[in-house]
Length: 279
Ligand code: SAM
Image 1: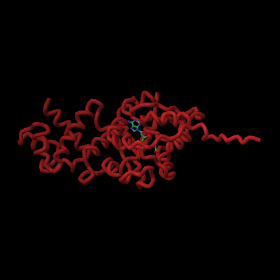
Image 2 (image 1 turned 90 degrees about the vertical axis):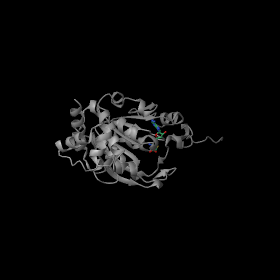
Image 3 (image 1 turned 180 degrees about the vertical axis):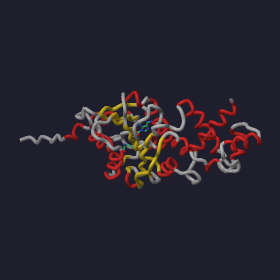
Image 4 (image 1 turned 45 degrees about the horizontal axis):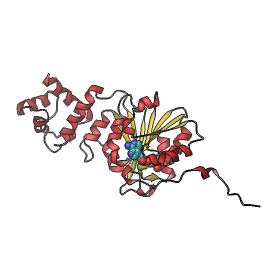
């Protein structure tokens, strides 16, 4: 009798394309990390989840099991048939092809949603702020470089505290849930990573109209992070020395303090005082 090759479930799957470093492709292979990311989303089985960069589907599998509906956005065209084949039998999974930054995530979700992603490191910061555009996700869990996670959650007057910390914390809280070593990935990246949970504030510290000018102001302040605030404001807010000191004193900020000592709340106060002073 002729031998018929066994056609198991994997037999129809397209071959995996090689990992593309230019797209930040470091695929997770550690089940504990994958479980931790999925668990940190606190899913009940009803939620809509958007995944950024499903890659070969390692995290997607976990999310598809726990989400009501999963929308996975992948830029690498070569991975799209792989993902379609992998989730052909899963009615709750939709694959969207393209750059995550070009999608209106809330419109794609058509309602409340949660966000997850082992995100490509080359565009981590743009992705974080894209994800924090209103209407914001209920929560987001990202796998990012450890150093970025530290900056996201940093407290004032620490080395990691900077413009990213202030601008993110004005809109959300960030908390590191787990440190991840390079061996958890294939191919391994050169640096440690971390799982971070981001929960948008019910009341953001800045309004949608303030977001952009505030973030530029904060960036300009941190470009001179070692300078005393009175000096910083002379260039950043084009104030005379006396006016700069008076403005800081009017809101109880020591003019000799450095910007990196101000909390996000104090940065917002300062920003608003400058806007008010300018009329
Ligand atoms: N989630 C998979 C995992 O954990 O194994 C893959 C993670 S890998 C670090 C990042 C993924 O994001 C890759 O699949 C990459 O092709 C995809 N990607 C890169 N840039 C992207 C972009 N601008 N928009 C959407 N996906 C992107």
